[in-house]
Image (tube, helix red, strand yellow):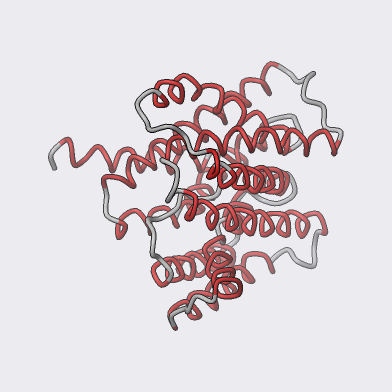
Length: 297
């Protein structure tokens, strides 16, 4: 395979791996989940600032009337990070990632309810498979530990917030270029997740050197490298390759969590996860008018 054709596949693999490490960073950081989310998005936004300034010089003047799209998307990004990061501290990394990536189901349902979009029959098949798989994954511990149930609920809530981000972004990108849009989302998300931490009275300082290193690692690896690598792959590979690969991201998280976190899923959870991911993929291809979205992690 020529090098130019092979590089997008490398970028896709690097991006998926970087996002799969998100749950590990949250668990390793000796800090509340929303604090880790704050530093992930704020550090990445600051590091992207020089590139944003450079791009501003080559792009048409910004129409401020469209800025509300990324600002609102940033609010849902902040809520997504706050709830999902917290979920990782209550449930397993694999379950948090799987449930957090059920956003395609919510995108389609929101489109049906609020925008009256017609859904294909395959969507309902995918939805039933996803629910059946998720029931197997979650049901294994449902009656055993209340804290695990809280984590699963938070991860599912994060998926709804990410679905709202996707819906707003799908419309906002019609009026703003992707780079500027993403940077404004980062600024907005930084502001709103800061407010969330203030309301929750989470300290933003006083952490160990190891935790600060993790803050920078999640910003650089999961946020910057992960999103840039997958965005590059999305621009150079067909959706038929990218979409199933992105849907499989929770599997890599589950595999990495075995040596890195000591979390070993049961056979029932592996089976349920596979069924749920198949359902999510079917939903994706039945409701895919746009390129695949970057996974929620």
